[in-house]
Image (cartoon, rainbow, N blue to C red; front, side, top):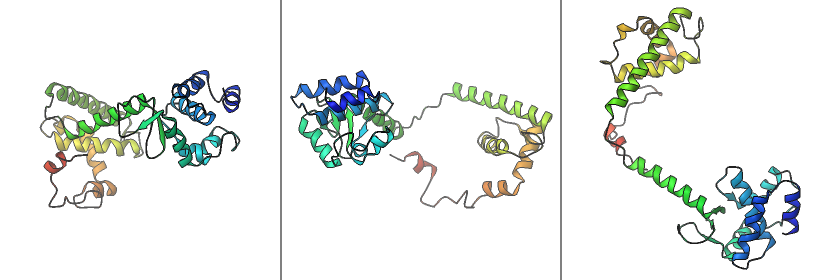
Length: 246
């Protein structure tokens, strides 16, 4: 173990789990370089804190040393380019554009260093998100929709009770953020499901909604053609939005 790793381990900055790959990985390719061991140990520490990678720019700039409350000269003062070259020359890091290559580390062009499994997990997740956005489901589960609308009926009933007992607003005598956030929900539900929700079945909620919508700010926000609700350009349509691709 290098003197730097030993000092960081003794200070509690690095754990035994951080030091193990820092000692073991360089030996796989005979690249026994204390600077390489250091950066692998720092990567391991970053992962243990919940990060998926180690930005070598933070190592080069001193930002990481400052965050760890270490002296600026705790490790070699290499530039980002020099840290990148050190990792690439070791043979331990594959290219970010070649997933699946049998290298334990991945270094991308931005200087982010990964353990390969975390790099591939990250990219698999990103691919899944992109696929979900490219292929919106055309199937609507009617049972789930009905269950959700039943929950809305329950919430509207609670609002009915609250306004009746504490009114005229949700928090009592003063109009509050609770009214503002609830107004958007009620407005949209009434707009989307006018047949499902009979407004006359919720007289106090209906009165609350009318009073809220009569406020100057609400009139402006929900009026057509304002800065808040600009007119849709003629080339735009709901269909075009649905076909949007990331």
